[in-house]
Length: 570
Image 1 (tube, helix red, strand yellow):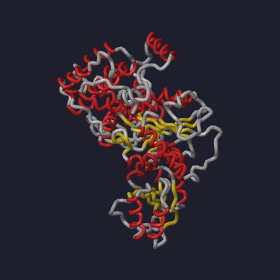
Image 2 (cartoon, rainbow, N blue to C red; image 1 turned 30 degrees about the horizontal axis):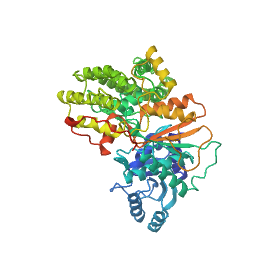
Image 3 (cartoon, rainbow, N blue to C red; image 1 turned 120 degrees about the horizontal axis):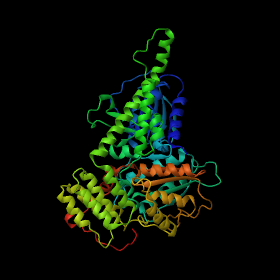
Image 4 (cartoon, rainbow, N blue to C red; image 1 turned 90 degrees about the vertical axis):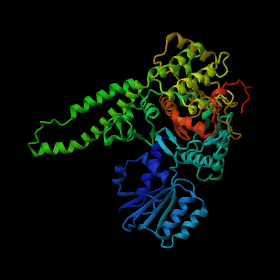
């Protein structure tokens, strides 16, 4: 179950099937992103693809010596663009691949437009999602719901993306969903409808234990996307932002022109692949080792290129040297910037209190620490608001809840009304009233004992003690203990054995901390393969945009008293 490999194989097959000769790759806005995640431009160039074009760009030149490989989403707009293209073809021959199921009527319209008979092939290749890591995929959708209900266009796109993932991994799963979420049930039903309608496509070889699709809702755990992160990939996304593997460094003080935007891809960057899940402290020492290794391999200034053999050796080693030089300068810049932000924004202290709010249950200590940090001028207004959000979520029903006072503290320190309103918006989005799970207190005697012992022993790393709710959900699922009453099956059939192939999808977005959780569960549970997907991959900033886009605006801060409500499920 490897999402990156699945999409990569589709792209390779498209190029191979078009045969030898010079080619152009025609894509749309979304498929451009899908392809860029699994192949670099230079890798595709080696396969005789010399031109990359957008189908919707108006001023493309006619180049009759090129074959066109079209990789497009099966949207009405794309079909319309293709019809126009085929009426006045710019290339010699067209190989058309849709990233999802295309209707018969659309294929008929294309056939009618192909009067010059330039179309050699029309196929469906189900690479209709962003493959982030082998075990992580995203649909890059923000604000998928309005309130608690799906936005119809987003539901349709999510159903397509999720069914495409299943088809590309050749899985016809049983489906479970989070009962407390109406949107999870709705998506489960839509996926089931597609599987039933396209039963021939989903007719894969039966495995002893059927695969399982588990659909969850972000609002069940609003804590995870609000925390600062300390592993490399998650930290880069939190502090700098990762967009389709690209990181914008243009705001870094004194940045050189060629490092204004860098690409971090585990497929093409060995250092990143080896370090993406390590803690920031380890990254620092690994960067130092990388630098030292680079210095050792560096061609000596005084190196005399006296013989032909010397020159040949230099030229042969130069590409590896140049690649290594690029890797070193990229990671030194990224880690340097992370380090600068950590110091400038006092993130170690902020993160320690965040972790206390997420993992401990000592109200008076938490309140005291939040108040102390709100007085600290180094703490940004964003982090100040984040701390109050975490407090509001955890101590929402606490008898000594001091949220109104903290909101006043935010106002007094000049935090904008936008952030003050977001405190109550986040509680509206993911507060106690809407959660189907118990996010803060241990569930059973074993968990309580574990927490007590953890308290006695102290925590190995105070900054990474938090485990996302997903960890416990998947752990229970793998052990066959996940309650049907909270996560029912869709339809009459249930799984008798423990699941082996699990696809878990989070409506409202997953996080890189959850990606790390899945990576670790895959490593520690032989025979279990888990792939994690989400409508998007969040950092705190995009999560707060999600909350706002979903219609949770929050109340004006002065009346921001959180009143306890009856705990009826939505």
